[in-house]
Length: 138
Image (cartoon, rainbow, N blue to C red):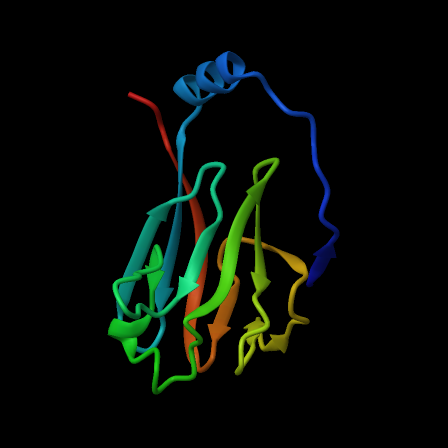
């Protein structure tokens, strides 16, 4: 099931509240497992957006699909972004040339779609499964 959501701003926390909450909360990591190349890509996600694409001219996105054949597989330089909102993971296609699919369904560009652990996502023709892992604080 695909869920499209609008963009909205939640309540903003003060810096001290945010820092305290971050220190007590587990680290969240976005994990993508490539189905065709048996490779795993992982990056912290937190409150940041995570760009997916392929590196060029000194720019390497946090999730760089060039080593998986990004250019020949139809991945745009800035293909999509992952965001985290209230503990839920979302993906947004950045109007890429070859599009993004979730579980086989092409998504509309410039709109957020909620993802669940185990969803299959395609950037161009690169197929990955998505997981959001919570790593306990030390």
